[in-house]
Image 1 (cartoon, one colour):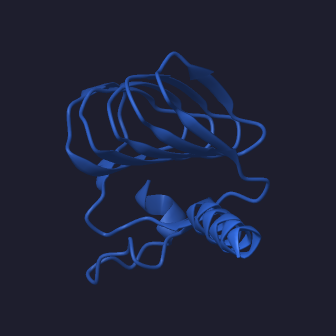
Image 2 (cartoon, rainbow, N blue to C red; image 1 turned 180 degrees about the horizontal axis):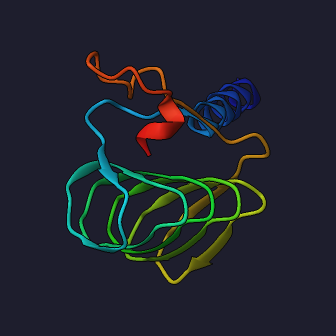
Amino acid sequence: MKQLLTLFALAATSGMAIAQCNSPVPASATVIDTDGEYSIFGAQWVCGSVTATLGSNFVNAFIEGNAHVTATTNLGVYSVRTGSTLTISGLNNNIYYDPTATIVDNGTNTMLTVCPDLTFDYTVSLRPSTSLEPELLC
């Protein structure tokens, strides 16, 4: 019985990791499209080639390709795309990242998950009044 429960727990955990490797960018995400320092609670969508410093807890950050992010947060969730760099400090952060991303882990109890096919689902990030392609929003 113990082995069966362990198997179910393992399957559920790997299913959650797969779900995080294919994440929808929420419409409520704050778009960060210029270099700078940000202390924003909640979902953040960091555009490609942006250099940003994030300093808020409970962050849910979607980091596009070739961005450079430094974050000092606790209990954050980060999805990091191709060629980006994330330097993380703080406690209990979860990072899902493309194998070509660079992760510098200066935190405590950080969970790192490699996602060979990390993708963002942009369908929910489009606001009804927007007629742009999703990639043009960020």
